Structure formats: C-alpha cells, structure tokens
Image (tube, rainbow, N blue to C red):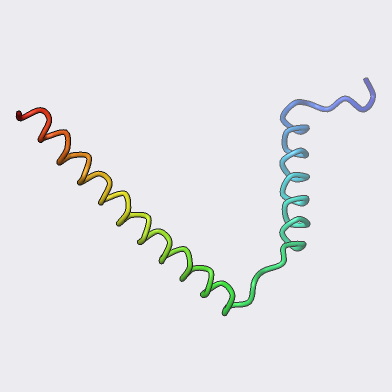
Amino acid sequence: MNQETSPEKQGGLRLFRYFKESIAEFKKVVWPKRSDAVRMTGFVLVFVTIFAIFIYGVDSIMSLLINLILLK
C-alpha cells in the first residue's frame, strides 16, 4: 500500500500521459506539400460532384418508374 494513489490522482496522471503520448505521435505525422493537398482536394471535389449527379439521376429515374407503375 506504499505506492497506492487515489483514483483522482491516478486519473490525472493517465490524462497527462495521454496528452504527452499524443503530442509525440503528432510530431511523427508527415504532412503533404500544399500542392499535393490542393490536388487531392480537387480530386475529391470532382469525385463527389460526379457521384452526386449519378445518385440524382438514379433517384430521378427510380422515382419516375415508381410513379408510372403506381399511377396506372
């Protein structure tokens, strides 16, 4: 029982260790160059736009078919 600490103090030490380890991991991150980040962002925006148009088209066609079937 010599090295036993209160739960509050032990929780505080774990929190401090968590932040210390998080900062150490954050320093290991390799960040992309600005030009690479801009290029990848452009790819994502183009892909999302094309995918949204595709989903809109499929939804419109399905809605039209369902309306034709139900209204006959």
